[in-house]
Length: 153
Image 1 (cartoon, rainbow, N blue to C red):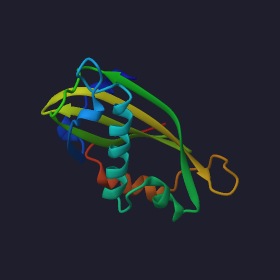
Image 2 (image 1 turned 45 degrees about the vertical axis):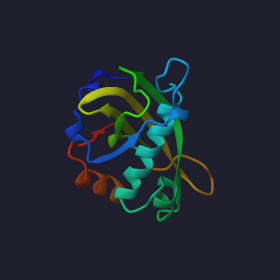
Image 3 (image 1 turned 120 degrees about the vertical axis):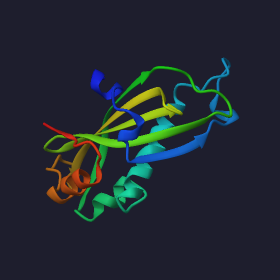
Image 4 (image 1 turned 120 degrees about the horizontal axis):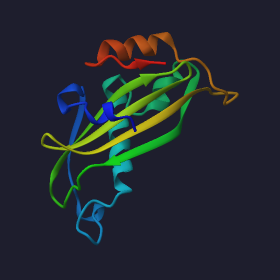
């Protein structure tokens, strides 16, 4: 993951969801099991698209006759979360490609960065499954919404 992702402060994320770490999310070391951070990222994705008007990205893109598919996920672990702590799942779109975008989820305990997760999505035609350009209206909507302008490839 590129270092500048780790430099995005919590205050630069428009979408934030606070949750409490539950017993079923920890492992034998009494810290959040690493795979659960992907579940947290999914919460971030859901809340991001809820903020744009839909609770899941699939229905959001159906208005264009398209869908998205996850193509890559990269995680940087900085510090563990522990049972019963309140953590903040923060989400933002950080990059646009011609037929893809990247969503960055930061997991924080107060202002302390615990994890950074980047998820890349391919934008596809619903019928053929082939990559298709991102709708300009989606890019414009996200640019208006974001506090930090997403990079453009």
